[in-house]
Amino acid sequence: MQLIIISGRSGSGKSTALNQLEDEGYYCIDNLPVSLLPALVAETQREEFAHFRGTAVCIDARNAWKYLADFSQVMGALPATVKTEVLYLDAEEPALIKRFSETRRKHPLSADSMTLAEAIAQERELLEPISSAASLVLDTTQMTIYDLRDAIKQRLLGTESSSMSLLIQSFGFKRGIPKDADLLFDVRMLPNPHWVKELRLQNGTEAEVRDFLEAQPMTAELFADICHFLDRWLPRYGDSNRSYMTVAIGCTGGQHRSVYLAERLFRHYQAQYPGIHVRHRELQ
Image (cartoon, rainbow, N blue to C red):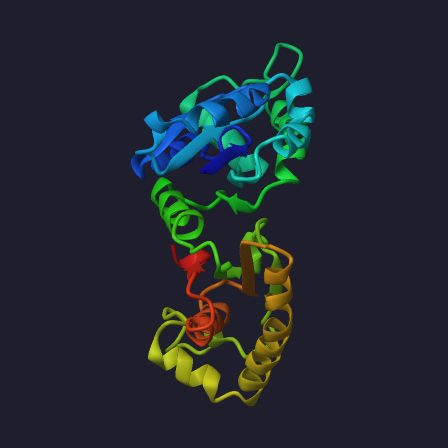
């Protein structure tokens, strides 16, 4: 049996994730009390649920704080035959505040004596027992609904159990470091195509930018060094039962150098990691 637990701060996209799993054939329940998880698992192992792909539940700050504190204990009591994944969604606080302002919904922790920003900050602390147990963390700050749906299909559902899901993500430092990055490489030491007039409006997927960067001797050296590090340490992460890894490649604007190297790393590791994906955050 497969059990997927969705959690995260309010406004991060939990409803979208749960709806996507329901569309994919999962039996889904929203706002399940943590204490009822063992009973749900026992019930969904009955023959009547055999036609479902698995079970997905959303557990978040709407639970009583005591139940959230007991999360690891409850998880440890589940049968060993249950394959459990914990998906934790989050976003930067300004993005969460903006989403609540746009929807005009009430935050579950809000009160007359607490501002929305304070409620969002407190929610992070309450959900720490779940976030620390997460097998996959997604930062939805700059994701659309469609980006999140695709990420769930590709990373959570599209990976064979025997292989690690690897995401190579380019980004621009000027828009912040991805919160869900496991490994991060700064490639800003490479010559910047942005300062070449003919290349400024292009990106790292285009031939002219590739030719420019490959003409720089340090590009090949940097690529070789990154590959050497990943070749040595990615298998160690896999040996420690890591199911998901995000390797972030950053340059100033996230348009040229990081995109080029992310694409090159994606092609380089495709045969070795069938569950590999590439995403260019600033080109979305």
